Length: 203
Image (tube, rainbow, N blue to C red; front, side, top):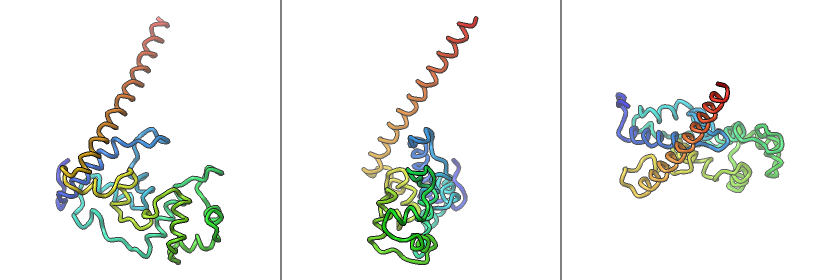
């Protein structure tokens, strides 16, 4: 990948590590890597931001930008309501379902979603437990949110290559990717064998 004008060493480092994450981590329900749009949806960030991170084209101050904290909670809640499915209906949760689940009213959830109200610490924890996320999801910086989508912290994306956390996580991810590649190879091999056997039977 050629360095883009204005791109920093940090941006290139983040791009390289995200490349490994996207290649190695395949959600079980998808059986394929996430797309930039899917990660953005899960994190409550813009798709263009994730794409720019992967391309390594951002300046230092754009890699983990300042966020509008007054609107952040509502944006992240909106993301959860859009992407998390109710086990009862198989569809995205409604405001009424969430309200019943945490013992409040639908209008309160609507106000939180619009950023009209700020939640108490207790309510934020209840919402986090309801959706199965860490309470820090609602206040995480954009880069932290992206890293958390893959089960890691921001440090994996930004620290030097010889950082112990980075070294260990990289080893685990490469092993995971190698295991996935072997599984794919075995599946392809079985399909080829079946095709050849079927062709031989029909000869």
